[in-house]
Image (cartoon, rainbow, N blue to C red; front, top):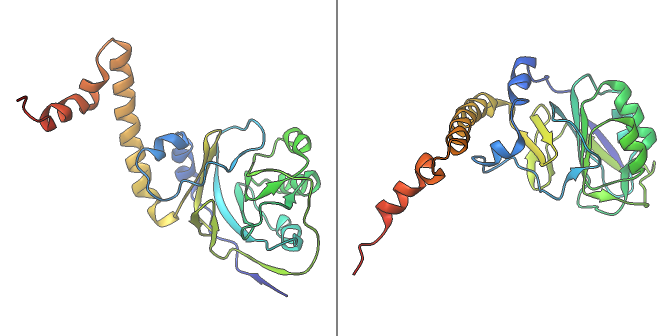
Amino acid sequence: MTYILDPMPQAIAPQSLARLCAFETVLLGHFLYRGMLDPAIRPVAAAPRVVGTAVTLTLPGFDSTLLHHAAGMLRQGDVLVIDRCGDHKAACLGGGVAMAIRNSGAAAVVIDGCHTDTEELAALGLPVFSRGASAQTTRLTGQGGALNRPVSVGGVPVLAGDAILADGLGVVSLHAVELPEILAQAEALQALTDTTIAGVARGERIGDLSGASEMVARLTAPAG
């Protein structure tokens, strides 16, 4: 029965988070191969687009002891990312703990597992992303857990200090060292997308605008 507490991560620079917040998760989904969480992890209620710095938490089995402790350590703009170690039955987050997390100024909670008290969470206004609701709950069992160690959430490796982007379509986790390159790719793709949509609005063919028609022509075998 051991709890491992690593230091709180360095926060992502506000200017980088502001740039990241300009994009929908689906835009990044056009070019990322790693970072998009399982789409089964969904917003509990309608939520605004959220960005923040990942604080990671491992909660095994029925134990939410470390979650209660971590709620008092969260900072403005943190996103608490919870690895439930494969448990998709017991809810680790309900209205009371969510209120404490909201009071810390944290931006959101992402759970690879269940929540409870859906209506209370919606009323609190704290964006929560989970696999669904459950009446079964965790409790203070002293089984152990870890704070700010690497986790696997929604099939994605998440490190403390990663940049998190979440919206109505899902959640993305980006390693901090890769964020500048990803932001540059996203900005270039957004510009291209805007140009393409403007062309389609004018009545142009999307295959011509995207290059798809030229590719098909190049790769089509000659007749006969």
